[in-house]
Length: 175
Ligand SMILES: [Zn+2]
Image (cartoon, rainbow, N blue to C red; front, side, top):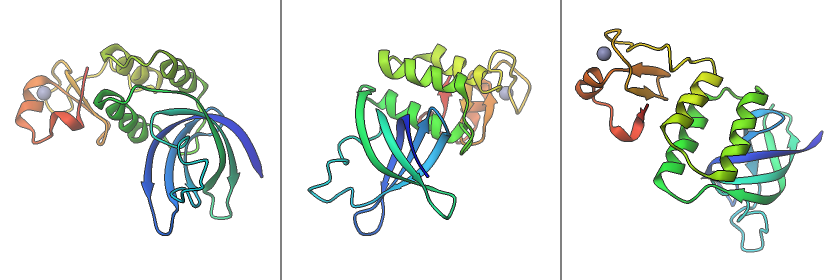
């Protein structure tokens, strides 16, 4: 089956041959893992569209193994190329479940890709929409007031516990 949907490219890793492995947050399927064939070949028109931070109209085909293949894409917009954008893309990749569409998350993703600003309140809003309740959360360690969210562990921490932990600022979201 082939589908046409909208999506935000979250990550791209180069594999064997000229294949690339993508994570895309899509309107209709939530976050998907997709392979794109021959992406690094010079003739691949797809390559420039399938870059992290691009909002795309993308044609995807379901594969036998349950994964997806991206067969065509056109860029509709993009997040500014900044450390803040990359951090946000990584955050989305880490906290959103695979193959679970969520209209509330998609609506936020689509709006975000248009105005391109990713501040603290954006993270708080996404966490709330994901049912992670940033506003009600407590430090996982001591129960204190939260200052950071750790996407890898899906966990909140207060400032003190965070500073004592070995987690780098880069892997934490300052909320
Ligand atoms: Zn604490």
